Length: 167
Ligand code: CA2
Image 1 (cartoon, rainbow, N blue to C red):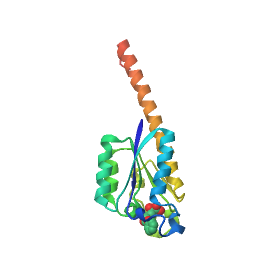
Image 2 (image 1 turned 30 degrees about the horizontal axis):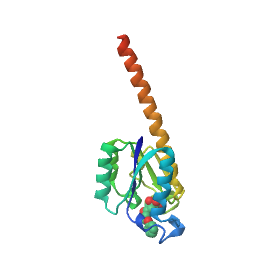
Image 3 (image 1 turned 90 degrees about the vertical axis):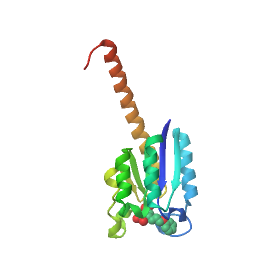
Image 4 (image 1 turned 180 degrees about the horizontal axis):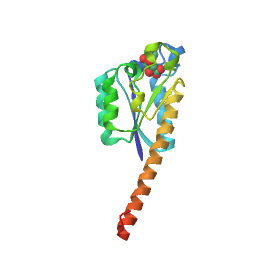
């Protein structure tokens, strides 16, 4: 079973209560339920967490290396400031998808730069809560394809070992 950690950054615990025109009307709990429902359909184990603290997000990214196959992250404001989160994602080397509820490129200039996109396999921005669901499908397909490739090459290696050939 594929295992994916989903991380929500600072202030996303306030979703649904304020700024609905930017971030939609769904609470974080409702978004997490929709993610969980899709995860069950896709037979993926998901672990969902929110933190207002950069250090805690860094720790959760680092710890994901042991137990997870990939990461979905909305780093919120840390997107535009955090070299620490970027370094953690690069260090663990897990396929990561960056999600934003709003379209960061239609907003203030300072939101146009993401420190995270360079270490992510993809970014989804501006599709509201649907972005998390697309990210889950996308990461699931990416991981399933790379697992398939690994098992095909492992099978080929074992066939070569049985035959006693090297190439
Ligand atoms: O669009 C996104 O998902 C963002 O990551 C949200 C961040 C913002 O700093 C990024 O530029 C784009 C802000 C999250 C704040 O969430 C709130 C939710 C409700 C009320 C107030 C803030």
